[in-house]
Image 1 (cartoon, one colour):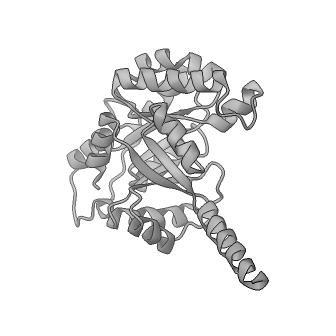
Image 2 (cartoon, one colour):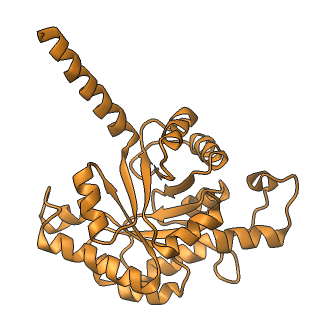
Image 3 (cartoon, helix red, strand yellow):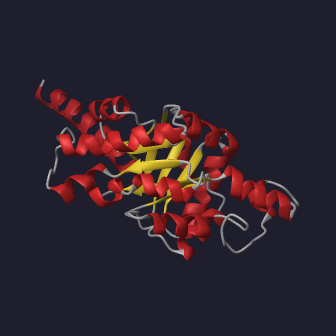
Length: 261
């Protein structure tokens, strides 16, 4: 899908399945998950350890295959956000956001004037064109690219309404970090804890009101159903390393039956 189509999908809150790219950041892996029918990639550069050259090659491959790319940056600063968007990813995910002031800063870093304060750069190759105008670049980055913040603590969830007011329509999604939230409130390995569920529902209820997508990772059919039923629509089905590990272990267990039979 195009960047414009993915952004439209976000605001329509359509269910869309992705894969986390964490360990095996290569074009062949992108082709494999694309052939399987996954529509977007969560490229994790917060917990992954990838060079921009590696990410760039994955992003370009995904775009050629019609797969959207959301890059989770390491932190909320200008260099990480601007460099990510200069690679022409479909959008960014900014982790550990807790305050309206941080949201305003993210918008300043991600958007060109008059919306934000991002420095202007021109690379026609990112548009699959020989030439592009400044106006085309501005429209593409300010209107077609996706900006998402991730909430991972009670403070962040409590500030969500104020964050949305400050954002003034410039956000496209609110992601939830259930693992960090569980650790913060002392409910480890308990996604069904009432406080953890209440935070998720608060995020999805407010997001629905404002026409924004909600995303979170799932590691099984059970967890995927859990988050879908709570109102999340951008859900990842495992990470690249988990997909490989699960297939390897499943195959090895089957082979043990041959050894014993």
